[in-house]
Image 1 (cartoon, one colour):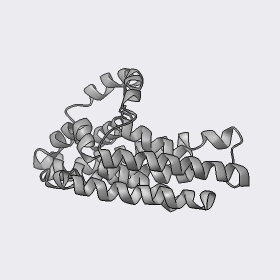
Image 2 (tube, helix red, strand yellow; image 1 turned 135 degrees about the horizontal axis):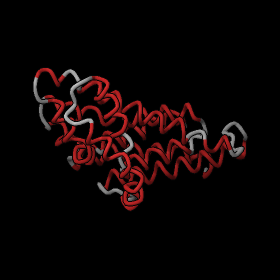
Image 3 (cartoon, helix red, strand yellow; image 1 turned 120 degrees about the vertical axis):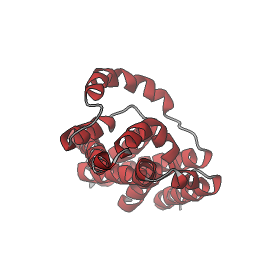
Length: 217
């Protein structure tokens, strides 16, 4: 299940390129302008990856804190089924190009408001520390895709596994974000084609069914 969870999180980030461009693309473009600022772009994305990984570690600790242990036979089976169902939902989300958790973004935006002023104070970015902090804060932006990956990370039942899953999600968003900031959006168009989405979604759905197979055969 571990590899399936990590791959699904990665596929979620990769397939969500268009959404990520809309949410974070402006920052990448602004950092990518000018030879001096291009060097800050990797630092900004490092901050984003650190933010996602931290979210995974924190939320991945919730179930163990209340006594849910993945190594317990009953809890392990329950978590495996929950992970498979979330993977299945994510696969369908990728195939149909919709964000089933978009409504949660409205609630997340309330938590984001206190951070918005701090983000504005960091612009325009001039130093590596500012770029790193901006990336970390931007990783907390209310986003249904993040919530989908985070739900999958939580039911892994292990903080390290959850952290790796969220890191994989962040890595999945990198190709389009880096190419948008430095080169162009060609890869974004390729990733958002129906054929690409169907392929990624089909693989995720297959992984979900494979995870569920021991419980239905």
